Image (cartoon, rainbow over all chains, first blue to last red; front, side):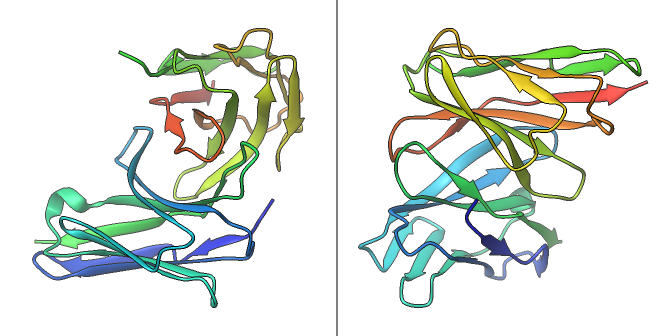
Length: 110
Length: 111
């Protein structure tokens, strides 16, 4: 499969911003996604970005895409304790395939 | 409501037994996937299917088998050949470049 890499852990204080990073290898990626997984549950889509975009903002979430460096980031503003979860980035290159990173466990410290 | 349903939520298996995990979707999605998640780790692809009656091995297919006789269903069998089956199993589906929808997962424990 394709390589999608993330750092494993991130801790932030409540109210601060969190930035979760992801790098991928396939330059033909068309859509890039961020998913959130709460304990013992499946994954839920948070947001996505099409590869011809540089940035997408959705309330507290900002996605930045640097296609040249194959780098994707998710910024969560005003991080809350309810944001504590595992965050996965994923890329799709079409033809019904989807590749996930290892996930970043975000811990929000009250 | 459309969605993807996995059952059971918890499953216990004795050593040497085969068990089958169910995954059903009513989203009319072409592709379905099975992932394995170990504690503190990411998702590893076991098998995926892009159309009915066709499926491909993912990165960790050994000890697992699947079938795709209907578009809606993609059951995963964990065979006795899988030496370390205790894990959280996630099923997903999508079509083309759209987002994948996930089931709530099945936690399999070997006793």
